[in-house]
Image (cartoon, rainbow, N blue to C red; front, side):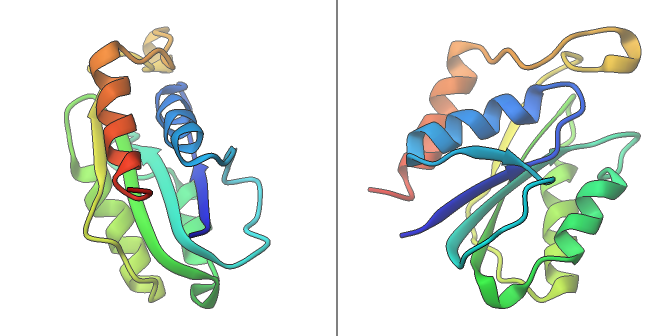
Length: 141
């Protein structure tokens, strides 16, 4: 199985989750600034909500994916309390015609990472790390 982990993170929370997923899968987490160079079975793609929406950069990234290079997208996301981020990623992938795996990961972060409030993110607690590792392990078991 070939895996790729891509993320868009403003406050560091989604990057932290991406790094745990990637480490568990034995790959490198990369920002969406890094293109997908080869075919992958699973593209883990994550982001957060900003004013209730995906950032335009993440939306553009998903809309520019080559469906023939991707087996399935696996959405993951962080936010203060709305799992809607997963739905938004799935919505974009569906519009693009990319298959979506039935599994997804959502990590609620509260207000950590709200840079506009001056709050740093990027630090997961033990429960969040374990949940993320357990999720990623399900793809290699």
